[in-house]
Image (cartoon, rainbow, N blue to C red; front, side):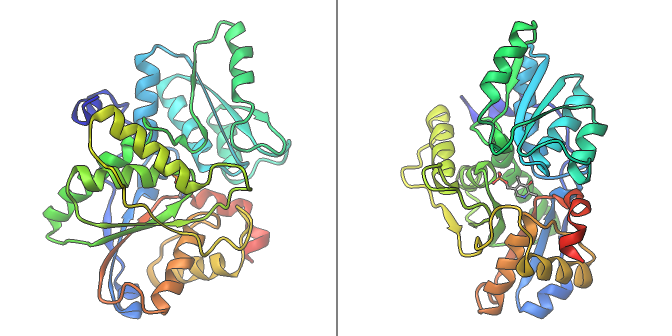
Length: 325
Ligand SMILES: *Cc1c(COP(=O)(O)O)cnc(C)c1O
């Protein structure tokens, strides 16, 4: 596979490039130059980083003449919501396996219904453990299935973030700026794997710094293992040589279980809202940038030019009002 050829086969879903904007007041407050890449404004179904992955995943689904997509996630999964929206636009039937049980439609779940997705409740499994079974059942009904792993994180989806590095470099050149580190929330691994490969492929020379937000129970592959696996698959398939990929993943901010919003997240959401008018989400960007604020307070990244990749997630806040007020 030639990385340059893959690009031709994507489904066009996002409004690209996404805006790159300075965070002037936060830069002054924390003594560094801060920029934000706004994938929350990517334009597909209320935005987020999964749209970049879905361009390649659903591009492949269409190429294979599939008519039905199955994916999985937590009740408030941004990935599932963006998949539902993208499937609606492309005329594909969308089935979502969501962790938990039937509940009032709020936040992302409300949007899943609005986009016409078929919801299946998966109890305690929120990472697609039952996808194969559902696929078998739908195949018997004559559907042609395309399976997307939770988070859209595999070697196809991650290509969206390989090319996002090229997009960023072009944008920085046009704006005559040069950031030296990219910081973001890392969870199912596709975003970080793509950025790591893209950083090398385009010789961007940036520090790619993920902040882990989802601690896997023992025995499950964790975020780092998933990143390593996806990087290895992309490099194998494309003939790129990356013997020891530089995977920087900070796991210091995962005291609370996945999707539980505490003081760290609330503080970050308040700071970004009141200093910059930017809405973070309680699960991913809230935790990651809450962690980043602590690192900045400890003097890390001082005088550096850092880019915060806003990966979206804001629709979830409407399901979190009791934890946020
Ligand atoms: C999925 C998601 C992430 C993490 O991306 P991964 O590729 O799963 O690591 C970060 N932020 C938001 C808002 C997300 O929905």
